[in-house]
Structures are given as structure tokens and as C-alpha cells.
Length: 349
Image (cartoon, rainbow, N blue to C red; front, side, top):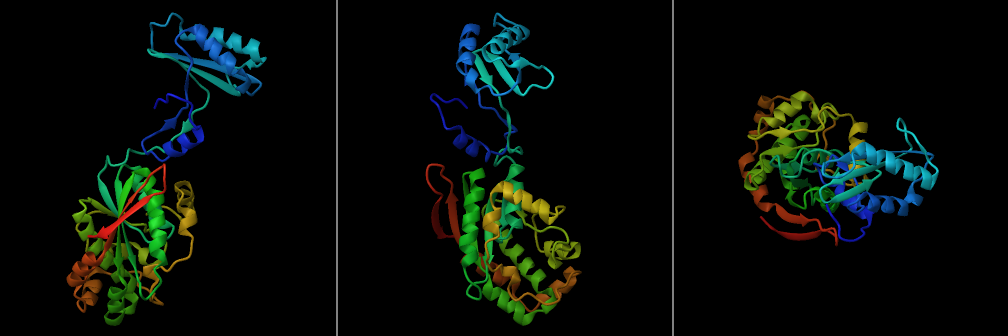
């Protein structure tokens, strides 16, 4: 990335650190095309070299340059030593001055910063993330995007039986996550009436598993409409009762596309650390009523089976609910703009 005028490096770094696929970020400055110009440039910035020891490391990709890398190292090193009084230490220098000799000029830098890594956004297909508003699912979205997927989102809320606070919170989380890809779709599904019917007609101990199975049915319908190849959830193995291996297997039985769980092998502290790095943690810990905690059973099943779930669901018209709630979902397109706040364009889908 080249700039024609001085830039605020702090703002540039903030933006670059959201670009998955960058392994390293190096701020460089052009120092001319000749060795004399290089020496003038370094001399003009000598007061910025803080430390007792230094080394010069030159990499010459343009073999037409009249000096070898070693000659640049020695001559510029002697110049810096004379100008600053810093001692040369080639083994463990406090300051390393890097010089790149390229066909269009000489470039100088001191620091290299680790980038976010991963793969560029959109290179691994599209996924639909089931976003609850807690700590885990935004981290699952972040990790899925880091592997090159473009993420869209679906959120289930239990209004009017709970508040709609989770909706605003989820929209704010999507704004944060959308920095990594520019734009995202968010579907808001009114799930409360369906939950009420599950509570009324189905065994209490299977309640959460049945919630999740219904969510997957609805999410898959939305995912196919948006041409997503997989669903993503924030479940971590054995973190809560509904997240046992048996329950996950019973939940997944209703899906006809892959269900990815990036957090499956992580513990809570590892998840929190990634949430802090992703910038979602402070929003995630704000209080809200999660739809899966609505009418939570006292003794939830930990070893449910697909057969038991199907028997319980015989009292429901699951396909009618799936079609209805997909139709009732409100879709918001959230676009991230660096020069202004994210803009929301709302509509029905």
C-alpha cells in the first residue's frame, strides 16, 4: 500500500488489523534511489533511533544497485554509529534498521508488526452464523471469517415474552464483526411463539434441544436463500448441558448442510481471550435475555437421541413453523464505513 502524503499510522494500523490474510504489517518510508539519498534520509531521522545498540540489515532485490547488501550494512552502520553514538551489535541489537533495495527506490523500516493472519474474506465460501448475543457465537463468527469465509447472521429472540434488548445488542455485535468483510446480512427471527408451543406440547427435559433443532431448520432455509454453504454455531463441547456430544448429534440430525463449531475444543478462558482480541467481549457481557434461556428446564437432557426428539416433535408441525418463521424474519444489511458509522438498510425478506 503506497501513500502519496503522510498518514496517521495509528488509524492505518487499526484498519489493517481487521484484514484477514495479512501475516505481517511493516510501515516503510521511501528514502530515495541512491545511497547518498539513503544516508541523508537516515541522518534526518537519527533522533528517532532510541537505544544503546543497533544493527543494519539490507536486502537487495534489485541487483543493478551498485552496492552489495553487505556494503550497505557496513557503510550505513558506520554512519549511524558516528551520528548517534550507538554501538553496533549484530547478535542482539536493541534497534534494527532495515533497508530494502528495490527497482523503484530504497525503503527503510524499523518495526514489523504481526498481522491478524488467516485467509482473505470470501475466499472460502459463505456461512450463516447463529448469533445469540453472548460471548461464544461472535467468537465463532470471528474464527470462521479468519479462515476465509464470508459470514452472515441469524438471531432468534423470544419477544414479546422477553425484552428485545438482545436485538439491538446483536446489531452492534454484527457492526463490530463486519469490519472484517465490509457488509453483512442479519436476519432477526421472532421465535417466542414457537418456543411457547414447544413448552406446551413437548417434554420439559428436551426443551433446549428442541429449540436448537427448530433453529437449525429455520437457519438452513435462510442459508440456502443466501447461498451459504454451512451453518456456524458458538457451541463448545460440554460447556453447558445442551452442548454434550449426544445433544449436538441429535440437534445436527435435522440439518442438511455442514454445521461448523469453531469453539468445540476451546475452554471458556480461551474463548474470552479471542473475544477480547476481536473486540466483541465488552458488548457480549452486557445483560440480555437469551432465547435459549427462556423457560429453561430445571433438569435438561444431556443424552438426548434423534428418536426421542422426533417423537416429541410429533406434537408440532415443524415444517409449518420453519416456513412461517423464515417468512417473518426481518433482514437488515449492515455495511461498515470507516469514514462514518455503519449504515443500516432494513427491509423484509
